[in-house]
Figure 1: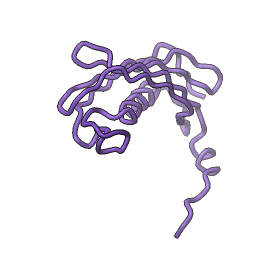
Figure 2: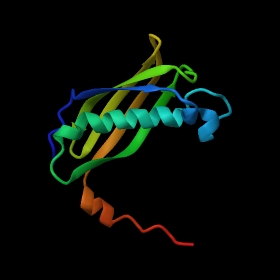
Figure 3: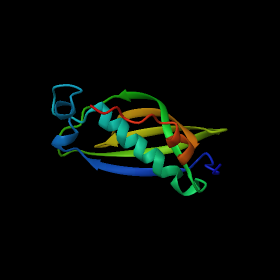
Length: 131
């Protein structure tokens, strides 16, 4: 199992485009960053924060998230996600992610991931049903 010491951090920046809005992804009917897209940005930041500390053949999978979406950001706005690993308990990793835009907090996210052996994990995934 990789080290993944608490304190690992990464920052990701994203410009809001039409493709990322609640209207487009179906999570609402307004042209602002969709909450699911905020979570996806946060997860990318968490994955990247630990990438260099994983053992060969190891990956992480998201298992839980709590999202507090505080401020709308429209198309053309730029948001920045700052992920910090705050805990490593066996295979469980805990992160906080703060998303900012225009000097204000856009979202606060608490996220958990589990460290897994990639091949073993994938061997347990049921194949997709065919039509």
